[in-house]
Figure (cartoon, rainbow, N blue to C red):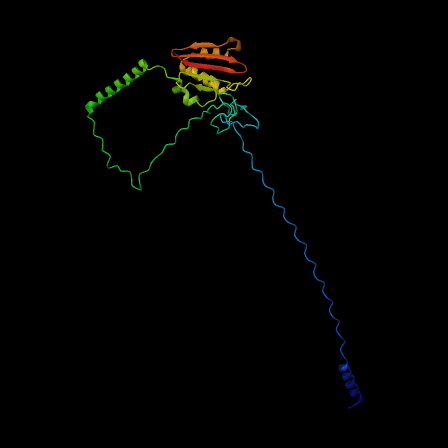
Length: 263
Protein backbone atom coordinates (compact mmCIF):
# COMPACT_ATOMS: atom_id res chain seq x y z
CA UNK A 1 0.00 0.00 0.00
CA UNK A 2 1.11 3.45 -0.64
CA UNK A 3 1.70 5.98 2.09
CA UNK A 4 -1.21 8.16 1.06
CA UNK A 5 -3.75 5.39 1.61
CA UNK A 6 -2.31 4.57 5.03
CA UNK A 7 -2.59 8.18 6.10
CA UNK A 8 -6.27 8.28 5.14
CA UNK A 9 -7.00 5.10 7.10
CA UNK A 10 -5.24 6.44 10.22
CA UNK A 11 -7.15 9.75 10.00
CA UNK A 12 -10.39 7.86 9.68
CA UNK A 13 -9.67 5.73 12.75
CA UNK A 14 -8.77 8.80 14.80
CA UNK A 15 -12.03 10.50 13.94
CA UNK A 16 -14.14 7.44 14.86
CA UNK A 17 -12.35 6.98 18.17
CA UNK A 18 -12.90 10.61 19.35
CA UNK A 19 -15.64 10.95 22.02
CA UNK A 20 -18.93 12.64 20.99
CA UNK A 21 -19.68 16.04 22.39
CA UNK A 22 -22.27 15.92 25.19
CA UNK A 23 -25.78 17.12 24.29
CA UNK A 24 -26.97 20.10 26.33
CA UNK A 25 -30.04 19.26 28.47
CA UNK A 26 -33.36 20.79 27.41
CA UNK A 27 -34.43 23.87 29.27
CA UNK A 28 -37.36 23.20 31.72
CA UNK A 29 -40.78 24.39 30.52
CA UNK A 30 -42.39 26.94 32.84
CA UNK A 31 -45.77 25.75 34.22
CA UNK A 32 -48.85 27.41 32.67
CA UNK A 33 -50.49 30.14 34.74
CA UNK A 34 -53.90 29.09 36.19
CA UNK A 35 -56.91 30.59 34.43
CA UNK A 36 -58.73 33.38 36.28
CA UNK A 37 -62.07 32.23 37.79
CA UNK A 38 -65.21 33.30 35.84
CA UNK A 39 -67.22 36.14 37.35
CA UNK A 40 -70.57 34.96 38.85
CA UNK A 41 -73.69 35.83 36.81
CA UNK A 42 -75.97 38.24 38.70
CA UNK A 43 -79.55 36.85 39.17
CA UNK A 44 -82.26 38.48 37.08
CA UNK A 45 -84.32 41.10 38.86
CA UNK A 46 -87.89 39.93 39.58
CA UNK A 47 -90.57 41.48 37.35
CA UNK A 48 -93.17 43.41 39.34
CA UNK A 49 -96.72 42.08 38.75
CA UNK A 50 -99.02 44.30 36.71
CA UNK A 51 -101.40 46.39 38.79
CA UNK A 52 -105.03 45.41 38.01
CA UNK A 53 -107.24 48.15 36.59
CA UNK A 54 -110.17 49.03 38.85
CA UNK A 55 -113.43 49.86 37.08
CA UNK A 56 -116.80 51.28 38.09
CA UNK A 57 -119.33 48.43 38.64
CA UNK A 58 -122.06 50.48 36.93
CA UNK A 59 -120.50 52.15 33.84
CA UNK A 60 -117.10 50.33 33.69
CA UNK A 61 -115.14 53.63 33.73
CA UNK A 62 -111.52 53.38 34.96
CA UNK A 63 -111.23 54.31 38.65
CA UNK A 64 -108.12 56.10 39.91
CA UNK A 65 -106.56 55.41 43.33
CA UNK A 66 -108.37 57.20 46.14
CA UNK A 67 -111.68 57.78 44.30
CA UNK A 68 -114.84 57.10 46.33
CA UNK A 69 -117.28 58.05 43.56
CA UNK A 70 -117.23 57.38 39.83
CA UNK A 71 -116.35 60.52 37.86
CA UNK A 72 -118.50 59.35 34.92
CA UNK A 73 -121.80 58.25 36.52
CA UNK A 74 -121.50 59.31 40.19
CA UNK A 75 -121.86 55.76 41.51
CA UNK A 76 -120.57 55.27 45.06
CA UNK A 77 -117.43 53.07 44.99
CA UNK A 78 -117.19 52.57 48.75
CA UNK A 79 -119.86 50.38 50.32
CA UNK A 80 -121.35 52.03 53.41
CA UNK A 81 -123.85 51.09 56.10
CA UNK A 82 -127.33 52.36 55.26
CA UNK A 83 -127.97 53.08 58.95
CA UNK A 84 -124.84 54.93 60.16
CA UNK A 85 -122.76 55.48 57.01
CA UNK A 86 -119.72 53.51 58.23
CA UNK A 87 -117.50 52.00 55.52
CA UNK A 88 -118.12 48.28 54.93
CA UNK A 89 -115.81 45.57 53.67
CA UNK A 90 -116.84 43.55 50.60
CA UNK A 91 -117.82 40.36 52.48
CA UNK A 92 -119.04 42.05 55.70
CA UNK A 93 -122.40 40.72 56.92
CA UNK A 94 -123.02 43.23 59.74
CA UNK A 95 -121.92 46.82 60.35
CA UNK A 96 -119.12 46.94 62.95
CA UNK A 97 -120.30 50.36 64.19
CA UNK A 98 -124.06 49.94 64.66
CA UNK A 99 -124.69 46.21 64.09
CA UNK A 100 -127.08 46.71 61.16
CA UNK A 101 -127.27 43.71 58.83
CA UNK A 102 -125.76 44.38 55.41
CA UNK A 103 -128.34 43.72 52.71
CA UNK A 104 -127.11 41.31 50.06
CA UNK A 105 -128.13 41.42 46.40
CA UNK A 106 -130.42 38.51 45.52
CA UNK A 107 -128.67 35.74 43.64
CA UNK A 108 -130.64 33.65 41.20
CA UNK A 109 -130.21 29.93 41.98
CA UNK A 110 -128.48 27.85 39.35
CA UNK A 111 -130.79 25.28 37.77
CA UNK A 112 -129.98 21.67 38.64
CA UNK A 113 -130.43 19.02 36.00
CA UNK A 114 -130.44 15.30 36.77
CA UNK A 115 -129.43 12.69 34.23
CA UNK A 116 -131.05 9.26 34.03
CA UNK A 117 -129.46 6.52 36.14
CA UNK A 118 -126.59 4.69 34.46
CA UNK A 119 -126.41 4.85 30.71
CA UNK A 120 -130.03 3.91 30.16
CA UNK A 121 -131.79 6.04 27.53
CA UNK A 122 -134.88 8.02 28.39
CA UNK A 123 -137.89 5.79 28.34
CA UNK A 124 -140.44 6.95 25.81
CA UNK A 125 -142.52 3.85 25.30
CA UNK A 126 -144.08 4.16 28.77
CA UNK A 127 -145.48 7.66 28.10
CA UNK A 128 -149.16 7.34 27.21
CA UNK A 129 -150.10 8.81 23.89
CA UNK A 130 -152.66 11.63 24.09
CA UNK A 131 -156.16 10.73 23.10
CA UNK A 132 -157.79 12.67 20.30
CA UNK A 133 -160.23 15.46 21.23
CA UNK A 134 -163.63 15.52 19.67
CA UNK A 135 -163.59 18.45 17.24
CA UNK A 136 -167.18 19.26 18.16
CA UNK A 137 -166.06 20.14 21.70
CA UNK A 138 -163.31 22.56 20.64
CA UNK A 139 -165.57 25.66 20.41
CA UNK A 140 -167.02 24.92 23.86
CA UNK A 141 -163.53 24.48 25.35
CA UNK A 142 -162.37 27.79 23.83
CA UNK A 143 -165.42 29.61 25.23
CA UNK A 144 -164.82 28.10 28.67
CA UNK A 145 -161.14 29.14 28.70
CA UNK A 146 -162.03 32.71 27.69
CA UNK A 147 -164.67 32.89 30.39
CA UNK A 148 -162.19 31.79 33.06
CA UNK A 149 -159.66 34.42 31.92
CA UNK A 150 -162.29 37.18 32.06
CA UNK A 151 -163.39 36.12 35.55
CA UNK A 152 -159.80 36.13 36.83
CA UNK A 153 -159.14 39.60 35.38
CA UNK A 154 -162.36 41.00 36.87
CA UNK A 155 -161.60 39.46 40.26
CA UNK A 156 -158.14 41.02 40.34
CA UNK A 157 -159.50 44.37 39.26
CA UNK A 158 -162.48 44.51 41.65
CA UNK A 159 -161.22 42.75 44.78
CA UNK A 160 -157.43 42.90 44.80
CA UNK A 161 -155.91 45.97 46.45
CA UNK A 162 -152.85 47.79 45.12
CA UNK A 163 -149.57 45.87 45.09
CA UNK A 164 -147.31 46.53 48.08
CA UNK A 165 -143.76 47.87 47.76
CA UNK A 166 -142.17 44.58 48.84
CA UNK A 167 -143.82 42.84 45.88
CA UNK A 168 -143.09 45.64 43.43
CA UNK A 169 -139.53 46.71 44.22
CA UNK A 170 -137.76 44.37 46.69
CA UNK A 171 -136.02 42.41 43.91
CA UNK A 172 -135.13 45.56 41.96
CA UNK A 173 -134.07 48.04 44.65
CA UNK A 174 -134.06 46.14 47.97
CA UNK A 175 -130.28 45.66 48.04
CA UNK A 176 -129.44 49.31 47.29
CA UNK A 177 -128.07 51.43 50.14
CA UNK A 178 -130.38 54.31 49.19
CA UNK A 179 -133.59 52.25 49.35
CA UNK A 180 -135.48 50.95 52.40
CA UNK A 181 -138.73 48.92 52.29
CA UNK A 182 -140.84 48.09 55.34
CA UNK A 183 -141.23 44.43 56.29
CA UNK A 184 -144.98 44.52 55.53
CA UNK A 185 -144.46 46.36 52.23
CA UNK A 186 -146.66 49.33 53.25
CA UNK A 187 -143.99 51.98 52.59
CA UNK A 188 -140.73 52.55 50.73
CA UNK A 189 -138.14 55.30 51.22
CA UNK A 190 -135.56 56.46 48.66
CA UNK A 191 -132.72 58.71 49.89
CA UNK A 192 -130.65 60.25 47.09
CA UNK A 193 -127.80 60.99 49.56
CA UNK A 194 -127.85 58.16 52.13
CA UNK A 195 -124.45 59.10 53.59
CA UNK A 196 -125.21 62.86 53.86
CA UNK A 197 -122.23 63.97 51.76
CA UNK A 198 -122.24 67.68 50.90
CA UNK A 199 -123.35 68.57 47.36
CA UNK A 200 -123.79 64.93 46.33
CA UNK A 201 -126.66 62.80 45.06
CA UNK A 202 -126.90 59.25 43.72
CA UNK A 203 -127.93 59.32 40.07
CA UNK A 204 -129.22 55.73 40.42
CA UNK A 205 -131.52 56.77 43.28
CA UNK A 206 -132.80 59.79 41.34
CA UNK A 207 -133.51 57.62 38.28
CA UNK A 208 -135.40 55.20 40.55
CA UNK A 209 -137.60 58.04 41.87
CA UNK A 210 -138.63 59.00 38.34
CA UNK A 211 -139.32 55.34 37.41
CA UNK A 212 -141.33 54.60 40.57
CA UNK A 213 -143.41 57.77 40.14
CA UNK A 214 -144.38 56.71 36.64
CA UNK A 215 -145.11 53.07 37.58
CA UNK A 216 -147.30 54.02 40.57
CA UNK A 217 -149.41 56.38 38.47
CA UNK A 218 -148.13 59.81 39.53
CA UNK A 219 -148.20 62.48 36.84
CA UNK A 220 -144.94 63.78 35.36
CA UNK A 221 -145.62 67.17 36.97
CA UNK A 222 -144.95 65.60 40.40
CA UNK A 223 -141.39 64.75 39.43
CA UNK A 224 -140.89 68.24 37.97
CA UNK A 225 -142.15 69.72 41.23
CA UNK A 226 -139.71 67.52 43.17
CA UNK A 227 -136.79 68.80 41.09
CA UNK A 228 -137.76 72.41 41.90
CA UNK A 229 -138.16 71.85 45.66
CA UNK A 230 -135.92 73.98 47.90
CA UNK A 231 -134.84 73.41 51.47
CA UNK A 232 -137.05 76.25 52.73
CA UNK A 233 -140.15 74.68 51.09
CA UNK A 234 -140.30 71.99 53.79
CA UNK A 235 -141.91 68.61 53.18
CA UNK A 236 -144.14 68.36 50.11
CA UNK A 237 -147.06 65.93 49.52
CA UNK A 238 -149.01 64.45 46.62
CA UNK A 239 -151.14 61.39 45.92
CA UNK A 240 -152.63 59.23 43.18
CA UNK A 241 -155.37 56.59 43.21
CA UNK A 242 -153.63 54.02 45.43
CA UNK A 243 -150.46 55.66 46.76
CA UNK A 244 -149.24 58.73 48.63
CA UNK A 245 -145.87 60.43 48.19
CA UNK A 246 -143.99 62.98 50.30
CA UNK A 247 -140.52 64.46 49.89
CA UNK A 248 -138.08 67.06 51.22
CA UNK A 249 -134.75 68.45 50.04
CA UNK A 250 -131.61 69.73 51.76
CA UNK A 251 -128.29 70.64 50.04
CA UNK A 252 -126.24 68.58 52.51
CA UNK A 253 -128.64 65.62 52.80
CA UNK A 254 -130.10 65.36 49.30
CA UNK A 255 -133.72 64.48 48.57
CA UNK A 256 -135.64 62.07 50.79
CA UNK A 257 -138.75 60.53 49.15
CA UNK A 258 -141.37 58.46 51.03
CA UNK A 259 -143.97 56.30 49.24
CA UNK A 260 -146.93 54.90 51.20
CA UNK A 261 -149.98 52.76 50.48
CA UNK A 262 -153.28 54.53 51.00
CA UNK A 263 -155.37 53.24 53.91
